[in-house]
Amino acid sequence: MDKSGASGTSKSAAADLARYQAQWEKIHNDTIRQIKQVKEQEARNAKLRAERSNQSPRG
Image 1 (cartoon, rainbow, N blue to C red):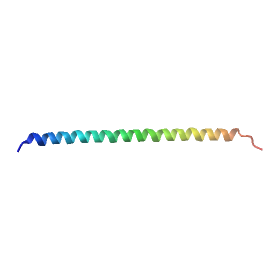
Image 2: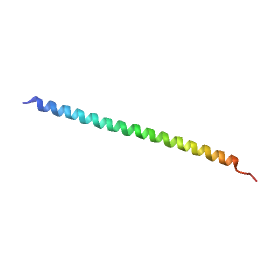
Image 3: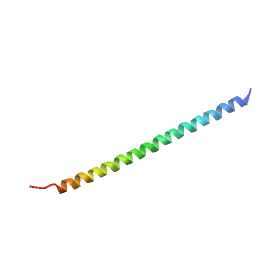
Image 4: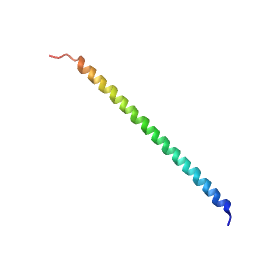
C-alpha cells in the first residue's frame, strides 16, 4: 500500500482543521469585540439619559 497518499490526506485534513479552527477563532473574537462595543454604547446611552433627566426642569 502506498503510504504517501494517506500521509497527504492526513496533512490536507490537518490543514483544513487548522483553517476551520482559525475561522472559528476569528468569529469568536469578532463576537466578543461586538458584544463589548454594544455594552459600551449602552453604558454611554444610559449615562446620557441620566444626565438629561437630571437637567430637565422639574415643576
